[in-house]
Length: 329
Image (cartoon, rainbow, N blue to C red; front, side):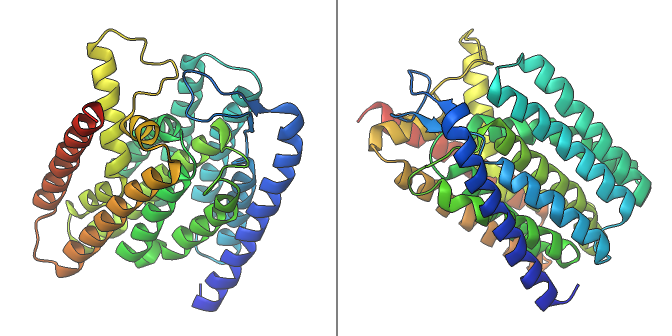
């Protein structure tokens, strides 16, 4: 797909996403209000479910990708089916809470569907397994981390932009998805008029899992089997915060599957009295991560294991230091 075609398609998808979010906002003001509480980071009733607009835009983008020859029909159909599963169960959960295990079962099914489409298109079981595992992991990570204004969408956008620069063969897909996020972000940042909801956080997590599964083979073909490790860097802020917080809650014997406000970003936002500052802090970290990943990949001389390991270790250290700083101020 030519650059002008990618640009015009991206603008159209951003418009579809914005329109869908606006329409969802009108509906959610009457039917889907997220009320403040001790396990919430917001202070006033706020509509949720705004990610539905981005979901519709992604489905439209998938059809356009097939029409433009960017995506083969079978992988596209698998992606769309998995997206409908994840977004559908999230939309239902936004209306009436479901068991976390039933949501997880649907997410795993979506991962299997995506993996089947990927295997049918490429015939490589390694990337199919990656897709199958990445879907439930990233869907839940983005659900856990969607707790303050703008953070989940901005982190997804930074990751998508990094993927586009790392792997030109998937750039058109990544920029289209980036545009779908752009349509929602003004409704959620700097002050949220509507939240993503489970439909939106699930959509973003699923989208990123699919992009990882599509980008990894392109990187491996270009530079070797370990090149996909660079994909961890723009995801590291969320992966580290979610993983370490989950591990700490499990070790403390807490009911880790219930909502809480003990993630680093939530404690930081409470201490700073600002969602904007924390979202910007995470954004700067992930922008730097993307820059490091792109530079290391482009050089062709740096070992991916060394870069990924060092960056993840740095993220863990910063998580510990910032957590201690918040605790003692």
